[in-house]
Length: 407
Image 1 (spheres, rainbow, N blue to C red):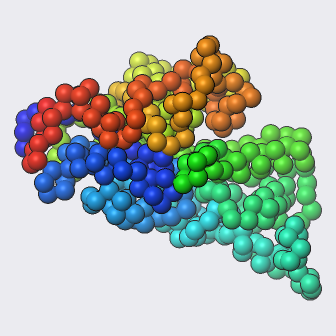
Image 2: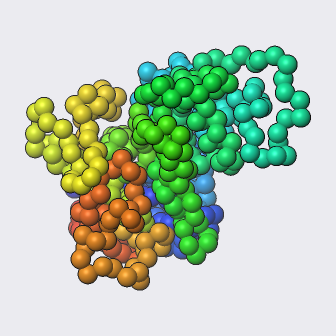
Image 3: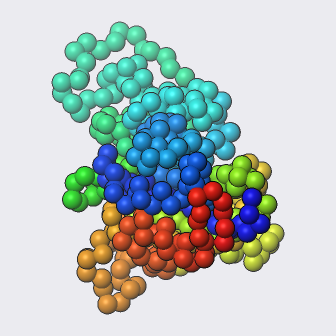
């Protein structure tokens, strides 16, 4: 191995960066040919960080391998739900899971031993789901069906039937986990709610963005508040732009570097994405976290995300959980790179005053994250992912060769 070893790792978004729906973006394959040697081995640690949550990591790794023409392992893939592995306090509880795809398999893979689906609740209590007239039961069950008390709700991603999931999740929250019972507005704070993937929209083959799980969450939040007059509370928010997601991704980068027998720590992360409100906001937020974390080292302060009406903080208790599971991050900075092949439109009108580009009326981030214009300012803007890789190599003075790493 060369004694000259780089000290950076790459975090790639998928939708809008590597693919549009199921259609590969041509620049992606070119980019990844530069990232591997003649044996197809990566020259630097690479992790894919997606807000998708409707499949297992191995399934996504297989899809990426086909698209990019290089071998991707599941250890290089981070789904929006991956950090749920750390929430062991819920693993033995009965949890209601919402989303689509193999949600039970995903939940069990993450460590949950007693998950239950919205469809299972509906089958047990068919009279709960009454919006679609064609699915209303003709004969109500003569005896109540007993299902375990639901202790927490986990939102993996947008479901297929929104009206069913919205109704039954609200039933669960307003009954303390007994959806067939009478709603009680005094069940507050409600049972724990954990959500993955806050993307308001995402980019597929259509020319304009499509609804994402963030839209479903907006619906749920507003329905709950309309009924109760109270704010829906989240026990945890995962997926970009949350700090726990980037902390987990940094851990995966460190793991890959160790497998490559790197003897120096990865100090710089480059996060390549197409969405200002998730990819760029998240990378900048984590960069701020790293800087403040390193500057205070053990002080009792909280890490605060900028200024504005809403607050995102990481307490020392939460950091202790991360570090016990993932150990202390070696990275000291996380740089954001924005591509123009997805959500971001380089030809859109930009306000003369940059502070007006992120306002309450057009803010596409989640309500629990601060409105801070500085966090949606990309470090670099490039046409596509191939140009992003070229730029990073230039910034790092990294010259790849076919069989060795060099600097």
